Image 1: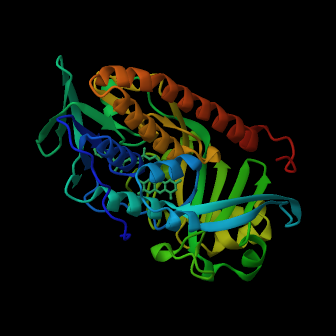
Image 2: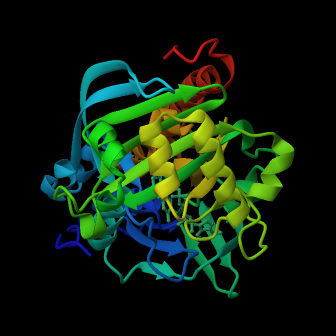
Image 3: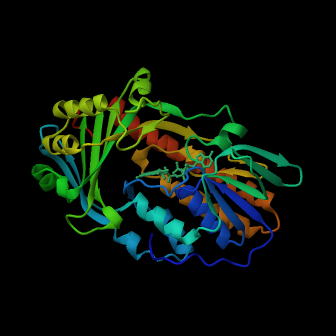
Amino acid sequence: MSKFKTVPQLPVTSRRAMVIGGSLGGLFAGNLLRQAGWSVDIYERSSHDLDSRGGGIVLQPEVVDAFRQLNVPLANLEMGVRSQYRTVLHPDGRVQSKTYAPQVQTSWSLLYTTLRQAFGNEHYHQGKVLIGVTQSEGGRVVASFDDGERVEADLLVAADGGNSQVRHVLWPEYEPSYAGYIAWRGLLPESSLPGLSHQTLASDFSFANNHGSHILGYLVPGENNDIRPGQRYYNWVWYRVLEEDLIGNVMTDATGHRREYSVPEGLLAPAWRDHIWSEADSLLPPAFRDVVRATQQPFVQSIRDLAMPHLVDGRVVLLGDAAAIPRPHTAASTSKAAYNALELARRLSQTPDDTDRALANWEPEQIALGQRLLAQGKAIGDHLMFHRSTINAG
Ligand SMILES: Cc1cc2nc3c(=O)[nH]c(=O)nc-3n(C[C@H](O)[C@H](O)[C@H](O)COP(=O)(O)OP(=O)(O)OC[C@H]3O[C@@H](n4cnc5c(N)ncnc54)[C@H](O)[C@@H]3O)c2cc1C
């Protein structure tokens, strides 16, 4: 855990919020609502701290704004790993384009541990699986958990991710839809990068395209958020078109368990790992091919689309991936979660005696944001995966 202090709390009013889901969206909301004077409890399904072993996140301004708003020191986050150029490689390995585009890549774990530390343990409840939500006339909302506990509050913030149970209860007709392609992913220590890959890829944000294939990679902080050269991780994401009827097979993990939309590191069925290695030979430039083949435990997620046309029902609010899942090409899901939470706290502070009005003021812009990102992600992703007429384009 980081050394940051717990976020100072304004005098707590009688207003009580519960946040379902204790990942980034839930932690942004929990910290910011508390700072706005609400008494907040977070309920997270997982019984242990979450971990992505440092998967990469491009540090976007909304995330920086949220940390500034919370007075959490940014030095560590902004340090991240810097890349200078965006380089596109031709499948034969030649450099197709190189554009100056400096940016900082940070890690999911660094954001998570910082926000988690800021929120503290007392009101962060692990191993709590929400199963139901009911509301009463007087603006009260009751959450039911699978251990039989029922909790009542003035506001429920659903930050329970792309498969949101809260959304399923209130708006069962809306589910994410499969975009037609998946993302194979890998994370390996910088020290394990094969020579050609290190030489070609390490200092840039690199890409390579082929038919139905788009790979990118960059360095991110390593173990314990270490950013020293040699101690970092290389993070790659390889988008591949996959027919929908094969999804069930890919998502059946090494133990035979059928997962919904992702298989974590270490659990991908060995036959699929072999499949990736062999496809790398025919589709990727040598530097990326070697990285993929050096990754012993790739993992996978399917790419899905969702942008809810409703985010508020009485005193229930959807936020983060529960509200809209932007495709990863937008690099926006974490920044959208941060912005959803920043604006929610701001609107609630604007009309402290009228929560319903605050929610009504908050909702339209957030719906529009989700839909804009959905359209943007579709345009980029469909172009890259389905419509690009030659491998030389974009
Ligand atoms: C472990 C983990 C690692 C990740 N790593 C990366 C990464 O490396 N790079 C990246 O770009 N994105 C990553 N993401 C995704 C990223 O956090 C989100 O896309 C984005 O930040 C929006 O977050 P969210 O909080 O809305 O949703 P999510 O991050 O999906 O979080 C939803 C949370 O809700 C909890 N939950 C679900 N159902 C229930 C329930 N019924 N009751 C209680 N709790 C429930 C889940 O356990 C989860 O913690 C990761 C997510 C997780 C959970």
